Length: 444
Image (cartoon, rainbow, N blue to C red; front, side, top):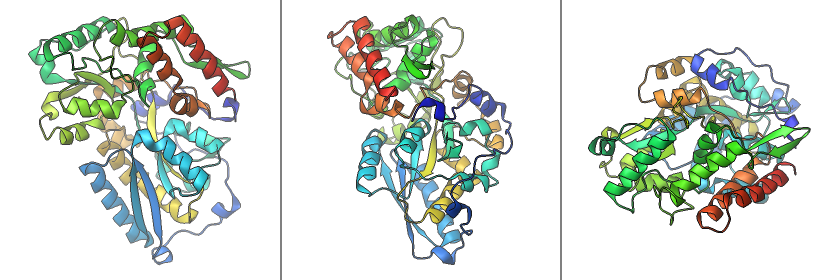
């Protein structure tokens, strides 16, 4: 499957979300006759049945409470039980792959929105177009927020929560060390160096992410420098990793370890989950993440790192002109292809991502809610302001079915960065090799 077949999310998505206005009803194409003719679910009809749901990440108190209430409401309305299995984000790719091969998958699963197209290409997801068309709540979600979920005019997932990333930092350390919130790249490095100097060499002033979600941290620097990962030109994907903008952002990011010493050279494969744990243990001053880490950090630190010691700021653009673009992301909910009862699974998707529980899911999980009334509350919230400002200029990775392979499975950029930091390749060679591999993967 190639890019031309995918309905992409436009650059106005962020503006729509922050403008707090719905775009009206979408008009997706019809799905299968069996889905269209399925009767509405009723309580007694599904009594005694059990639905398996995969949630991603690590459950905290809020998420456990959400799932308890959601599943209780689902049982009340359908008669069915729900079995929830939590899958750590770094393990999700392997988990889905095993499920696809072995037929031991869930009925319903959570997804990152940029992963949907890749799994549709492998026939792993069920077409839910009719479920979406028939649900009044879903018609309130801005139409452009369905871009990642729509392939060949069919909808395969429902948006559950939106978001972008900002820099989580130790506000108490900044006050103690008289550090101002960085406004430029130069400020960011200076702040990181001061933290390492005062807190110790085993502390990451600004933590380098080289793990499964590394490109979430790398991309703002690349985009801020005017670079990009790839572009669809002349009917094929053309890698942009060797162009000046990408090289500048990549060089700056690897220099955080090699030249500036604000992150340890011994931790080149850590992902955001690993970094959050170190943050909770007082070993990180700043790193790129989302609001969902706050609750986990408070719990892991035993209350030692609380709300008063944490804050967010937008990763700055190189020249201080405002926030750097960050990934315009979000999480979705979808029906797996092997769902035992597609109708029942559809009822769960409607309830989970509907206005009541969808808004709660986003808020409790540190994401941006997708319904206009809930989004309006975030406009005046100082805690959410960095995400709102960053979301205005947010960008997306190549919307191709093979991006997940390049980003996760093959870890093209992670490998390139490690080769530079470890001194095995210079930047030009590493990016030339990575560019060739990226093009081969995207153009399969």
